[in-house]
Length: 107
Image 1 (cartoon, rainbow, N blue to C red):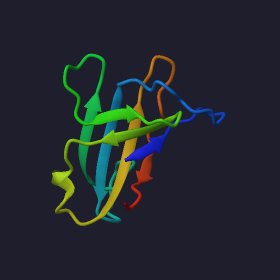
Image 2 (tube, one colour):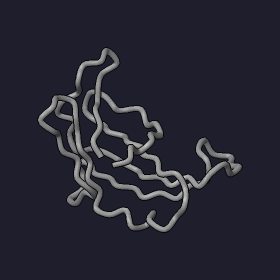
Image 3 (cartoon, rainbow, N blue to C red):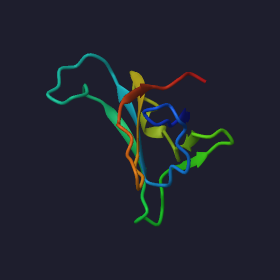
């Protein structure tokens, strides 16, 4: 998965660091829930400065502000029918991204 990070002014964010949480969510449909997102199954990948091992890899591309995330595996979601979404949260010394549910583009 490749994505871009920009400031509120549209400038590219560089040196995003290694503090991240990426979740792939399978949301099977309109199911009533008291939570802010419908019932779902998810796989969480995380890394922080305080961990020795990260799940997945976040790397900068040659384009300023553009990053690529490669998960270790998505096997857990492979047999679940539904719509796949992505939630990305990256924390840095100066800022943190707002977590939104994103559609995963088809390859």
